[in-house]
Length: 61
Image (tube, rainbow, N blue to C red; front, side):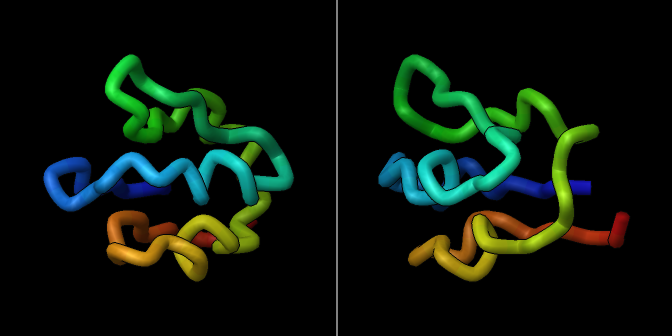
């Protein structure tokens, strides 16, 4: 499961760009939307690269 703390997100887009499985889409304001969670490989690149600790990935595939 992917958890987002949108109130802390500054819409940098790093999570969207670095996701190898294209799990995220961008909302109109630029914040990430988990659009394809079933495609997530749980590599946690989004979590590791987020400068504001907005993303938490729980579980494994």
